Structure formats: structure tokens, C-alpha cells
Image 1 (cartoon, helix red, strand yellow):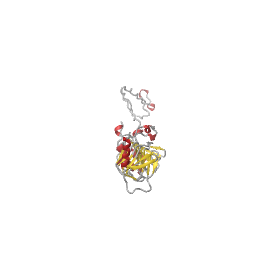
Image 2 (image 1 turned 45 degrees about the vertical axis):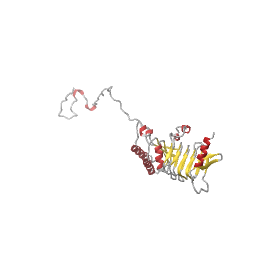
Image 3 (image 1 turned 90 degrees about the vertical axis):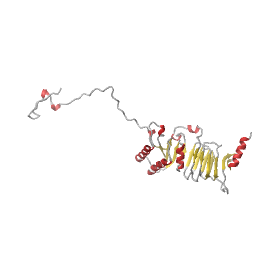
Image 4 (image 1 turned 180 degrees about the vertical axis):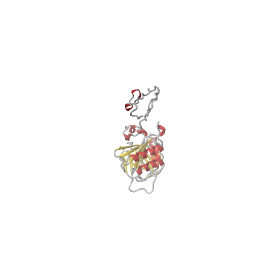
Length: 293
């Protein structure tokens, strides 16, 4: 009920408080309404999952740049525009621990990146004086795109180098990696299977494969087949003039006196180490051995 108080012509100090109320010590108390049983709970913002964001991680004197999973395999997808925005923020906000000239290893995981996107990542890193050293990818298309753009790559199905176990070494070899490009100096390709290059392997470049290595062009760089210890692996090239050949634990170099005319050749491990034979003769000998009882 609302009560009207009589007005006074005198000052407020002389006016008596109606019904004994003292306005000098007056406190208005409002009793809160009881909470409704159907009231919605307060929603809190979920904690961010670092696995769904661009991350920098220091490991053994190198800097790992870890990308979030492929959008099609995540409940909270991170698309390219958002990925690039996150990378810019990480670089601009990490000036205190991102030391210039620290080599960066890009862990692309299962993300599908094309050559242009890899180059954009490299450009952002270059602005902070961070050189992109190598790219690890489980997607074949990403590995091919990176190698085609002139970057060192390693195609892998696990992240064992991040301390997630050594199961990869006991698994079967991966499917062959096909590269339709020329490997320039400074490019290194690593793969847990056979590597087939439709192009040249220039001096200063290298290939490390746990399977065979086939070069449909000039081989002038360093190649290592059977890197996991398989001595049955082979290396073949249309023009064999390598800086160094390795098969399993055996090592050989190109002869000091190169032949006058090059023909397709195959390198393999014989009784006395690595041997090189003409591809036609090797294929014929191999076929004869298979047909013999």
C-alpha cells in the first residue's frame, strides 16, 4: 500500500518524520524474488582446446609450428582464413619467445595444403625472421605440393617425433610417393615408402626413403634407399651421377671418371657392397634368377 505523507512549508530539518520514521537512517531493503525452478543455467564459455588451434612448440633447439586437424575431421573446424589469422596472432604476440633465425618445422598433420598456402605460411614466418626448414604431412597431396614448391618434406602417418610412441617404425611401409618436379638444391624429401621422382634431383638436394628410389631423370644429389635397414631396396635413375648413394647401411659415391654416355642404371647391394648395373642387364638377370628352380 502506498502512503501519502503530508507536505510541510518548513525546512526538512524541522519537519517531523511521520509515524516515527527517521529519514537520516533510512535503508531500503528489497527482498529478492525466489529463483524459478525452470530458470536456465548460466552458460560459461568452454575452455579452448589447443589441439584445435595453431600452436608453437619448442623442441630440441627447433621450433614446431603445429596446425589444427583437417576441417572435415574436426567438430570445431578451422578453415584456411581462420588458420592464417591465428598464425598472424601467434607470431605478433610471441615476440618474447620466438627468437629470430630459429628453424621452423611445420607439422601440417592431415591438413590439405596447396603450394600457394604453404608459401603464404612461409611468408608470414619470414616476416618474423623465422626460416621454414621442413614440412611434415600425412596427406600425400600436401607433401607433393610442398616439394613442388621447393620445400623439404617428410610424409608420415604419425607424429612419433613429438613423443607419441615408436609404433611407426614397426608398421608396414607407406604407399609410394610420386613427385612430378625437379628437386632443387636445399630440398630434402623423406618418406616411409618408395619415392618416385619424375624429374631431376639436383646437387644439394636429397631423398631418404625406407623403400626404393626411382628417378625418371638426372640423379645428381644424395639418395638413401632402405633407410629403415632394408638391404633389398634399390635405386634407379635414367642418368646416374649422384653425389652419394646409400642403401641400408652401405655407402657409395659416384666414380671420379664419369662414363662418356649415360644409360638407365640400377644400384643395389651385392656381395662386396653397393654395385651399379645397366637397367636392362639388371632386369634380365633378375628375371633369370626368378625363373631358375
